[in-house]
Amino acid sequence: MSKIVLEQLGNFAVVRHVADSIAALLKPERIYLYNQKLNCKGEFTSFKLCVVGDFADKQKAEQTLYWEIDSDLPFDVQLYTPREWEELSEKPNAFARHIKNTGTIVHE
Image (cartoon, rainbow, N blue to C red; front, top):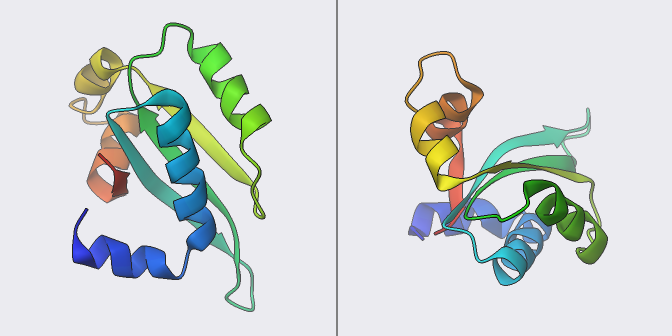
């Protein structure tokens, strides 16, 4: 992980905790932080992660994350298999491409 990414995440310990927990549970290829919400006071209130990995059952994997990970802030996850990611992240109007182009890799 680059020094810049680590510095950016320094203020987001909750994101780091959740990303590390996801990595431990699912052993994904990559995790992107692609959305962060701040309130009008500039306080971090929620975030969204994209997880790319081999999941035998994506629904079960997603449920496992929400059941097993305690977080001080609400978070959402979007799961892609490597094949889905490869195909969709190359399509001009696909959400996966948006994540790939604008998200920050927090685990690989």
